[in-house]
Image 1 (cartoon, rainbow, N blue to C red):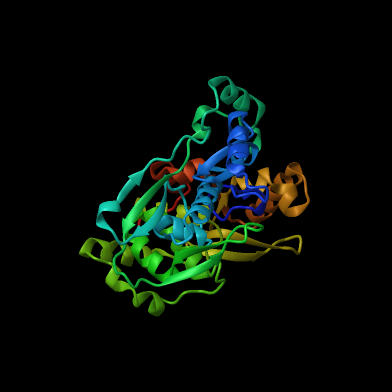
Image 2: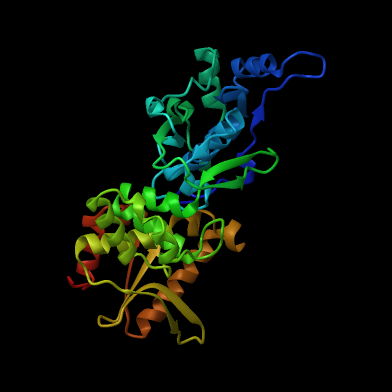
Length: 359
């Protein structure tokens, strides 16, 4: 996967310490497992198998921590980027903190977590890191054992609406999360332009847990959360640029980069009849230039078998045949991947070289 989205169920193996029927408490047993390097402690009384944490992507670790916090403090209300993630919206960057509302001004601020490894010795920690592998077989470092901080944010109004979302499978708990509309209006003006476009594209396309498109009118009921002229301007620009036709965060990011570079914007998801009788739907289309643009996300290749049942080589070959047929129709084709899309000047240079003019 290339971006932050909801965590898979198998990444959510959280264990809460409890009083046992024999009068003992499971905390002592779990603490011993932490000292042996078998478990990690995410929040007080909430643990996770070390392998589940270390094999998880950073965005999954963020959601695991939110779920752990909900087990520890069930009344917590998640907000801002954490709320967006829990609602199922993609985030371009993984938040550094789990965001929680507070009514008390003295509680506002960031709090670092206790060490995940508890009283485990340095030798145990080194053994744990050498024994496990991260996502896609990546070698682990001490950074992978950093917990996720908590950031308490003052609520803008005591009566702010809350939705109750089901927690990870098997935990039996729910999470209290700010109403989707309120979380969007409060959070997006605080994000970078490219981050806001990624969220809004998905929101307008209904790619979130409600699975329905949110209208501008329903969001407008929360405009009072735009507390400054700058916030209003940032929100308005992101909304005007957003487009539900974008089918992935990579496409959304690419279009945001085109806006930043001042380039002519393309049509999205154009379909062509190919010479072999098939059809091709392309990500971007500049009709005045006869130019096709394609964003190639890593997920298409690294998870080809999981998603399509085909080998990576087969997917790459089919992409080449498809591109050859588009070129045989007299169309130009320009492609780019995540590294180019991340850097506006790089993608801008690629597109200008392909003939895309300024607005």
